[in-house]
Amino acid sequence: GECWLSALRSRGLDEQLPTLVTIEGLLSYLSHESIDCLLRKVACLKGAFIVMNTNNNALLQNTQTQRRVKALGEPHLFGVQPGTHREWLEPYGIEVLECVEGSEAMRKYMAKLGSPISGCSDGKDEGI
Image (cartoon, rainbow, N blue to C red; front, side):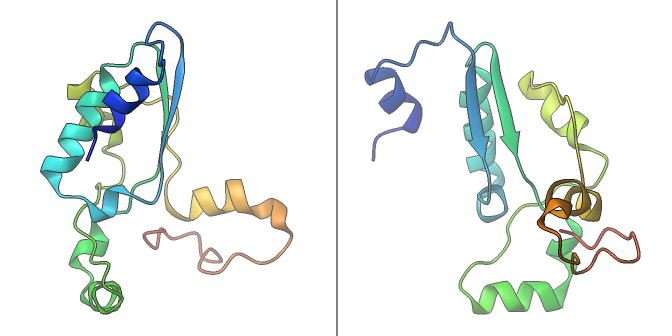
């Protein structure tokens, strides 16, 4: 298949203009090598803004969670240790402007729905 970045370039991507890149619901299913390749390509876009989500790497150790997602055919391969996003992305030249993790993210972005947020009552990060 065609590389996503090559496809965008062939369709007129102007790399001199700010670009918003969204990487959501993807990284946990990719190998470290695939993520490295993806982030290197994103990093070459000058002035890019990136919105992404990652899973807590503790999910990789949680055998119950691993069994559940594996049974669905979607094993988690990648996660980031909470509090290390800046260190993880720095080698790519990607600056973290904001990092909202775990149940804090659920409260911040889902609270407007007006219903209780499952798993957020005790304030602990449950790997969301």
